[in-house]
Amino acid sequence: MSSSEFSIIDEFFTVNSSQGFPPILGVGDDCAVLDIPNDKQLAVSTDTLVEGTHFLKNSDPQLLGHKVLAVNLSDLAAMGATPAWASLAITMPDIDKDWLAGFSKGFFSLAEKHSLHLIGGDTTQGPLSITITIMGLLPKHQRLTRGGAKVGDAIYVSGNIGDAGLGLLKARSGSVDLTDEAVAAYLMPAPRVELGQQLLTLATSCIDISDGLSADLNHILRVSNVGATIQHQNTPISDEVCQHMSTIDNQLWPYSTGDDYELCFTIANDVDLEKIDAGLAQTFTKIGIIEEAAGLRIQMSGGQQITLNKGYEHFNGK
Ligand code: ADP
Ligand code: MG
Image (tube, rainbow, N blue to C red; front, side, top):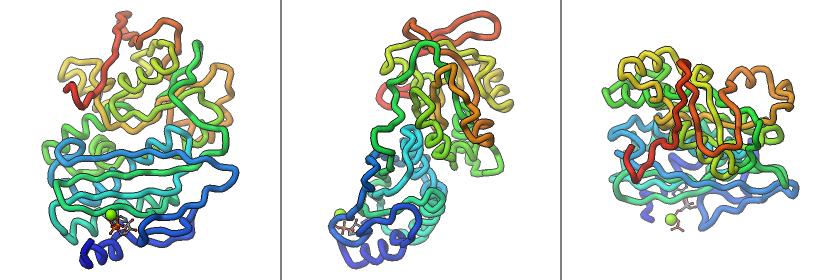
């Protein structure tokens, strides 16, 4: 790495903070060194965002810095883990200090919110692509997985589904208006980290919705070896997305749009939801029930039942 690349790391990617779990050794050496507390275990996940595939060309760097971290934090949220550390690999076509300043601002403002430390990374030249490996901590012997849903459990989803899908359509037409709920859901998703932590001892299964509710709930169903029926009228969909569904005459649209970064989870019917913070409890909705018969069925308001098994698939198109 050249000295100018080193100065970039100093200038944009070296932040010391004493919040959370500071690394023993952070950015600057050949490796970072981390100390995992005795009563904890490590949860690790990696996500890559590629320009033109996962975000639009010429995206605002500050929003991108937020989003790439949000997407990774969402995976920790789905496991019930507490964010601790991240490493950041950036491949970029050239060194553009304005771009780096924006990216770093978006990244660190979200990192600080979750007491997350950037502990290292890699910086290389090439088409714009960003990879984060995120690490979180879980109490020993606890984790929230896709595999624990049981027949009779209630199915919940946080927030709305479809907002980010509509936001993508608007962003494609050039909107960066963050006062528009749909655009904000797409460009600045808020990972449900606190909710995930509270669900850790309450939920039987959990996943974050990145490829659409249908695809991601189907992952829970397959791994847990169960099926489900969702009541369409209970699915949280904004008025604006409902309007869009009418316009395109597709009531199932929000089940297959990606980028929601909400949590979908199951809880045994006899569990007392009062254990969840009142503020957080308002952020999710019961949408259906886990059943024995395999597959995901959507019960439409008119009585019709539709089986859904797809969301957004990168290698198969829509
Ligand atoms: P090496 O050649 O040993 O891989 P590098 O020259 O790539 O080391 O990186 C030097 C230091 O800067 C390392 O500590 C590395 O973790 C850190 N680093 C490089 N790129 C980034 C980045 N984008 N964000 C944070 N830290 C980075
Ligand atoms: Mg390197």
